[in-house]
Amino acid sequence: MPTKPLPLPEFIILTAMIMASVAFSIDSMLPAMTAIAEELTPDAPNRAQLIITSFVLGMGVGTLFTGPLSDRFGRKPVVLFGFVLYFFGAFLSWAAPTLELVLLARVFQGIGAAGPRIAILAIVRDQFEGRRMAQVMSFAMMVFTLVPAVAPLMGSFIIDAIGWRGIFLAYMAWAVAILVWVAVRQGETLHPEDRRPFRLNTIVRGSIEILSIRAVTVTIAILALVFGVLFGTLSTVQPIFAQTFGAEESFPKWFGGISLISAGASFLNARIVVQIGMRAVIRWTLWTELAISTLIAVIALTGAFEGTAYFILFLIWIQSIFFMAGLCIGNLNALAMEPLGHLAGLGASLISAIATVAAVAVAAPIGLSFDGTPISLAVGTALCCAGSLALMQLLGPSTHTAPTTDPAA
Image (cartoon, rainbow, N blue to C red; front, side, top):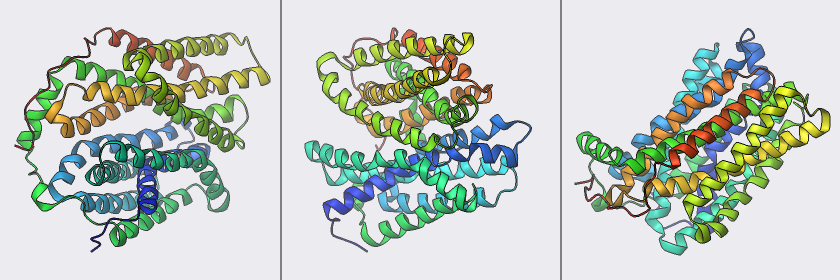
């Protein structure tokens, strides 16, 4: 078993690849929507979009438990077992004869992805702190941002070569490659004396305490709406390209460009959040997105723009949604974590799990109401932004008294 830390460049690449598993598992499926609908659900093609939200649902459920499990059994076992479950979820998806079974398998695949997603952050935290940790995460994010940009293109290549089910073979190969890499090269970073018992009653008590803080619950609700818009966009963006604009073949290239530009949102937030604060960034971003989405909804309903002009406006709007996610999600997570003190570990898992699962309930109706135009996504985005702005009014001042309960006690 490895005992020495990985060389920093190798560790950064490994971290980025593990983090990118979620993006790869979602974005590479986008070009397959039409083929999945034609084969598995021709009478209700919108149901094919559930292949995205089912994975997200599993990831949200798994996130609730993976943090405490990594504190109890160590980081490496959670990463390895997660990729084993991810592999079998991908295998079952590949073999499933019906859409319902594919969706169930995707839930298991999402649960598997949650383990490595949470545990790798803990591994980074175990080995680095302060500015060094921030530097490592920044380098990892630079590599990570390439995956959403190229994943749809990779998916389209696989579909052209061996069909849409071949994407699940790629997931299996991905899981095996990283599993072997971690097993052979990455050591355990959580020392036995630092491990915490996994006690369900302690987790329940801590969860109740966390959810009793209004600022936390309100922020989780806002985060769920923002996630809902993001997942709703991922579910419907390919059908809109295909059916509204006849750009199905060029979709992977357009989406790749949007993904690369969206990486700039994090850099922009880093420059402005210190000057104007998290709440101001969130409010201004939501107001901007509300205005743009309302405009797109009006244009889609009235037909005021057509052809190239309409397509350009659509691209700007989709770009704005990804920018909204980049400017809001990190700040909302920080706001939710602000009052948690010693409950930070459990709080991180709980916030992510509830927001992600609730976002599926927001995103699924947006996707299922798709009518061949951007109307459902535009209206849904505008409503979510308006709801988020209303909830922002419920947030109190930024000073909090941190809870003192330690869920490991």
